[in-house]
Image 1 (cartoon, helix red, strand yellow):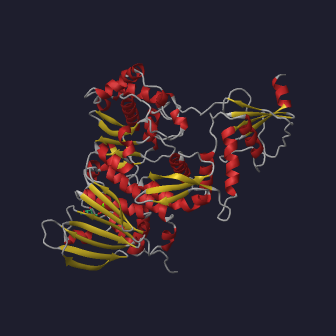
Image 2: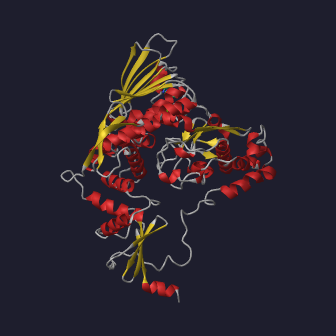
Image 3: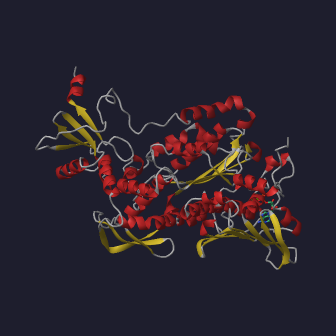
Length: 615
Ligand code: ADP
Ligand code: MG
């Protein structure tokens, strides 16, 4: 019998291991940018093309590498950042696992030029399939210039796994955002397919946020800053009116490392309770600093997840700090706020913040704990006694405790009325319509009545109408008399460009107009003029809202977004005529009873059920 077990050749083992660290072009962007930061660079340039598949290049003016280091850097577990296990608990650098360059070299062609400031010449290295193909002395400015070409050329299966160029580009930009936010003192630029898309001068954190997210956030940032002996938190949260329907601009950094933490996210969201609707997301950029010994960053290959020594303390701290910050300023309406009407209607926006409310928020014992210096040391030293405060606080605000359903169904009504498919309604002649609460339309039938949810019903109608739209049957465009320009963030611009052809069929004539700007030449025939910009912005927001939903193809997401966007909203007064048109359109639909999102669009209340109620 022959043996069947053998060791994998290095380059295959490396390729397999690389899969953990380098999943897509954006992973390489992250690693290369972080290496440049770790090298002490003050200027970092990112260049990429073909969504990073053809090229990802990072040029820094950091400390560079010697000839020996340049060779070693591509070995697995080769790092200059730790040498023993204790170092792991003192980490201040972004990298430490010594895997990134080895992984990149296993799945792409790498060319690198590097020079230490105190050496006369630099070194050039070319690597393919983990093997050094070329190594020679070259003239080079101090620092490192590393280019990764043809990612996954040797692993076609993985290359095929990548998403559309727009999606991959979005991921790349997202990584750039994270590093650029964490290091506002470093200059960054980014160049995509030969065009400069970012040019970020050094500045303060606030300036960096505005550079990245746009001027409109400038006046809407609230400072968060709490220092204790145990940990510090600083950064900015958006006023409630920055809340969007998509989870976009939310960033947590722990010791300057971007992390994903649903738990801490909840702590922030909880602080906004009753200020924003349940399905909206406020902007935040928050930095937590604590002793590296209190956290374990080594639980995830890309280090985006972290284990904290005491999560609950952190939760309470973050929650209290954000509440405190929000209580510090008056929430007043901002005139140019044109997002969601639901947000504008909220008390927190429409009514001024009273001194009373502010005082109540600020008088909680926790705020005092946080705001008085040196009050948090007890957390470490005497857990039993004072920690109770934290616990109580956590218990009353912790996850799962505070989330209320959007509306509650009381009584026994939920079982009886049917909204099952396929029922037949006979509407009496001379039907009259009544609107209830500006949400429902009451329609009498020959055997009871229907409660129609106006917004969902309209979404259903539009949804089915949009499904019939195609290239040869486009919707009517109404040309804008005064075409409006619209400036977008880079991500949104990429997105809009990606869907603009489809949008044309739905009556939106939108053309590129310089860098990240578009001009709206026409909108669907029924858009109220003067509203075009808000319509397009809302549409994009909604589209992003569905973007994380992988089960729908792009077209479906677009149709759903459009239906949501264009539908008459709850809270809108309808005339008799409008109600009549809506009901008649609804019953032309193939599925009048459910909204595109699967929720009931109407409820049929039958005579028998009414009888039972009165028994
Ligand atoms: P890690 O960052 O975890 O140490 P990497 O594989 O990313 O592992 O890098 C390996 C080593 O190569 C680093 O520890 C560092 O010494 C060196 N290195 C990588 N990139 C640069 C750079 N841009 N400038 C200087 N040194 C670098
Ligand atoms: Mg690294």
